[in-house]
Length: 473
Image (cartoon, rainbow, N blue to C red):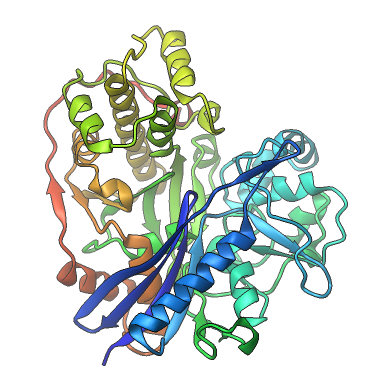
């Protein structure tokens, strides 16, 4: 038995709808529609074009239905932390604000003065990030909103009319209790957020509802809650064997960590900026955020370079670790002027400043590899969970130079692929919920190993300058 499932995967720069045929011996993906995700700045505020994204979703579902026929399910994942506010009639009050907008700077100060960072972490297990949902809601001030829905849940609400919050994404907000898995209403109230904004929690694999007739596309198709935080779906799509593995979900962001049965809420973990996010089947994604390929993408944009392959070929010839930056530094969060910021960071550190595109690219890739090394080492130390291999999934798994540099830095084998791990994890959870597949995460991952081509990079000995990112002590 097999089924046809549509994965709606919304990324920071583009969205896509992928049609998947899934069965006990197959996971076949076809991208049927891709659409741009272009943030818009208005009046000094950076917004998402949520209605444009929704139209892209509908166009993609129309294309999936035309190609595959009747769908057996739809699942939606996206980036974390951002949300839409709804009034009492379920109407959107305004375009969601982009997490890279600067509005949270004062809100961080205000919230930190009300609840100590130690209490926040001990309750929620979420690392301090200025774009966390909690700080965004504090920055909202007085708004006549009845409900806040995270981006995947907002799209699901528009499709089905059923409001709720899937738990893997809820855990990124800084407003979920890491131990109980319930909303941390005490924390919310302490920083002035109305706990009544929170929609009921739902677990990955739950049936949300069916696409309503008024949508006009894929009417009656079940919509399932998947790992709606794209990293949660990507970790499902890690083709690991056993438990002794680290993962790097490598895209615009890099999320680096291990999979655990429970949270790590120690002061040492907080000091090293590790976060405890919920995974599928009650697991914990114990990880650190690294800036990721955003650094390279922004350099390409500012330097006017469209073709990545020649840039990486030239970067391969640049001496290793000639210049390094801290790839977890929030100075690199905002868009624009990335090469200048990288040069300034190198200058401040007394290192050679990159002078051409190849040197900028090599600086970024070497810095990412070192940040990955630090995160993998710290994850093992803080959790007591040893690893024998590092799995790189997502778009970065196609970057051969980055994968080899990561193996060299971590001194561990790196297994690269699948590049479409997020979509794969999305459809695997749907297929299991629909009864097409069964079994544990380990059994789902076994199917991936049998159906996907993977590449292994063995570490080569390279001089280690001992540079560590500032967030890792």
